[in-house]
Image (cartoon, rainbow, N blue to C red; front, side, top):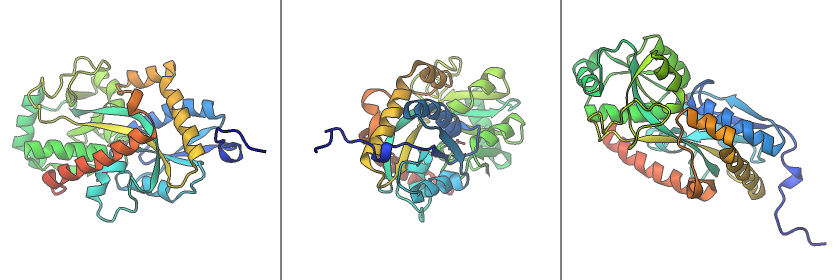
Length: 312
Ligand code: MLT
């Protein structure tokens, strides 16, 4: 007897919990986006999505773990602009190819980048900050989440524009890096908006500018880099869900549909928007769009790294 025309996910997938690898520390931006999106996806899928933080090497340890996981839909990964693009030019021996070794599920969120400093950093605005950094780079500490992470690559770009080489201090994610910034143990950082809104609002850190074309409704008082006099610093990051290569298409489709549903859900949207995320709509959603994004981002960051670093 011929089966239904619509492909069914094998064996009633999912019949047990799904692990979503987060390649950075708990409490940081990737973790936060993964938990918000995963919460709603698990409702749709009828199975829990368990976040597992697999940290190290700027997120490439966790992404490698995901590449090597069984391709049965029970392990997926919340990757990002670092793990699935910028890591390529930064790690000549990277154990995975972001395009060839993963099935793209979909973009989860765009995450604008801000230039941040500890609250008593002696500069009142971006031009005073850039002047101070240029004069004092030799004594300054810049926090980041490991070579290849978003904070690393986006500050590499900033430092190359300013032509400075501060001491780069690595953490397992910008969750812990943010604690160090709040505590004043490091001087400045470039971070994704979803990690910074409450600290900026509460005054525990300074935000000099957001590197997008327009201000963000979650932090309306923070000027754009263009408004603040550094238009050449224009950069944004993103988070996206991937499955190991060879995960059966009906399973990937089910995950994509669950991600879409999460991004259409009012409560999920509000949680992401309150943190300043840029929600993907229409043709930015889904598998094809993510495959194209990975390709263009690998190209973009390969060029940037060639010009800006990694020695900078
Ligand atoms: C994190 O979740 O800690 C970040 O996405 C780190 C980064 O890439 O800067």
